[in-house]
Image (tube, rainbow, N blue to C red):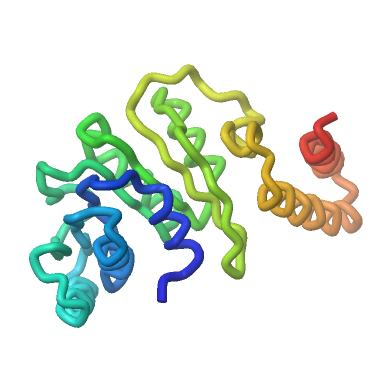
Length: 214
């Protein structure tokens, strides 16, 4: 059973692209992609032999040998040349930064990235490297996760507001985004009631403006 977070990532992958899943966690996502006809070939990448063996066990269990291919790789260092779409999820920002710094981003059609920490720093990285955010989704799976899809097309730097809240999310303003903002505002409010820091008050006002489109 795929988590809501991984299902959201799967829905953001373009059909019939060869996918490399970095840190594949039992190859759950690549197996799902094959089983649901989203792609005909996927790679399950792992940095260590133990997790890679877990991926191999699942691939055998689902009878997907030769369709889901396990690869021992630090990030994308051993990614095969036919990879088109890269998924990096379930990691902290600095691990993701290391992976991106050590690959040729221009080689790939798109990246789908979900950071467990510092999503604003991830968007800052994309902005600083003039990369284009194609899509963003928020999913609640015990926690609000933000999933960002980007490619290497040139884009002017994003604004501070876009970096903090997401350029696509700000335009779409769907219900889950508003729920996320409301949760964020509540958290800032609780801290503000104890600290009375002006910077927190400004964040609360800023979120209110976004939520109510002021």
